[in-house]
Amino acid sequence: RQVARGIAPPVLTDRGLDAALSALAARSPVPVASDIRLPERPDATIEAIAYFCVSECLTNVAKHSGASRAQVLIARSASGPLLVRVSDDGAGGADPAGGTGLKGLAARVAAVDGAVRVSSPAGGPTIVEVSLPWRERGEGR
Figure 1 (cartoon, rainbow, N blue to C red):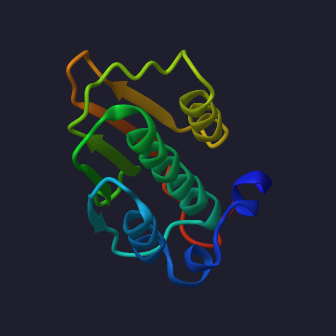
Figure 2 (cartoon, one colour):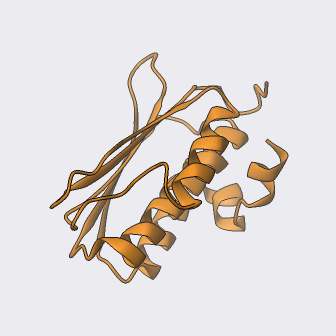
Figure 3 (cartoon, rainbow, N blue to C red):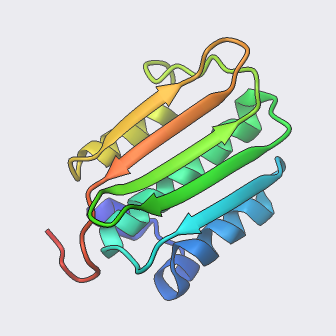
């Protein structure tokens, strides 16, 4: 959790996921459409891990996918977990067992009892879904 907090950019801390992800999307060489559906901010640790997941996924899209566009969805149903979904229209073939990016993402998510699912058949698309436990801001662990 301390590592997750340490990577949080000031815009995330000050203004939340919507603003921080808008900044990530603006810097991406691949056009990114964002859909953030959160009635309130999650706990700071969960928020930082969600940000890290999107950042890592968008980095992978830009470096490896050959995609022409990507989409980010952050949502939470009434009493469910926080869903982070990043998809792209690239070539597919992302392997969670290969490389360090998706492994690192999975390790951070597992640290808070979350789950990662990757679908990336050859030819695409690639979809990374992360489920994070919901905790109210300040609830901690």
